[in-house]
Length: 508
Image (cartoon, rainbow, N blue to C red; front, side, top):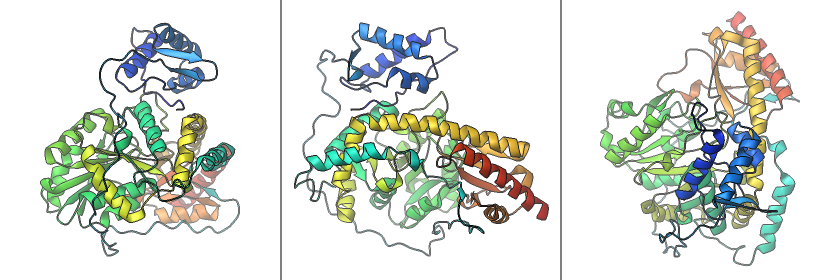
């Protein structure tokens, strides 16, 4: 298993040295089972960069932990958790017996394009000139920086090991090797203690959402979503027979106290809510991070109502602040939270591999629907991804991309303030691969006018007002992705965009 990011938070105002804090928190992760014997820890340089401390702090902490018998180090295998004496308690995951044949699920519900929440995917703006386009589309990673040669090696290894069974129909739940790697990933980086038997591999995160909606809601039920939210999300939920109720978010995330009121305002009883969808690590599109208070309130609310919380943890790997909260599913949620993740944004979109971490009672129903809808996610590709993670290539890629995205994010923010100053408001800069910007100095200017004038200068931007249902922004607001653009192109694009905004303001 390759090393990954550790969930460690340092308190620089504490009287305890940083070295001692690292030692204490690594030891606590080991005792809690979040780090297990044989797990690889990040290299000292990588962990120092993650925590924003001197490499010497990490080296000395690792040395002390080795002296205490918590860690071990061998040439060629890095620093790992030492084999500890048995405590007499059984492991959390276990080997697990093969699952029974899944039940036959309810047939898929038809798509209803007459639903008011049904909206087509937004078309890209029309550019007046072709060629070298400056595209600020969100959701696209830095594909040019992807280690294609290393991925090709993992694919070669997977095909080299493939037998006749691997080339046939695989298990609907996904490759056992990949599910084991995912279990370790979410345990180490998101503090989720999930056994592989509760992890389902899917065709991207969207398939996980689709299966869960089919499984959990029906006529007369209610699905609560964040407002604003992605139009594709509203399509997925809008295709069900449930009522979709938007609830506003603020700087602390979903306003849990408003759920009952909003549901009643739509003519429903809060007891009808079966599913609540949230993006707590980086709310889409605002980028707000859900506070710990709201997280606990949401879990309590869902448990009381018998609802399921669907945590979409997209972009969780890319956080640019010192404090990083564990996943919502890491809380003691009493089987109310389903955690959904994806490799499409961290690696490349064409991979189309996501996953869901399920409470035990949802495993069989989920398998039944997935089996009948697509049989399997391609097995050999899953094996290649498992190899990519196990050899440490995934962790190294995430570390490199975090440094790259931090540079590009910083350049974007600097350029926006350089060219627009107090005339721009930015949210969501703490995490993820996009920011939400509002042109406060251009109130009253239609977003379409800015799009048109930017396109005339070879810049493609994406209005955000369509993501809002309850309270559309008063100023022209845009979702700006930066991950795929080099810093020089970001500088050029922002300058052209600022000119387009001023032109649109003068003509309005």
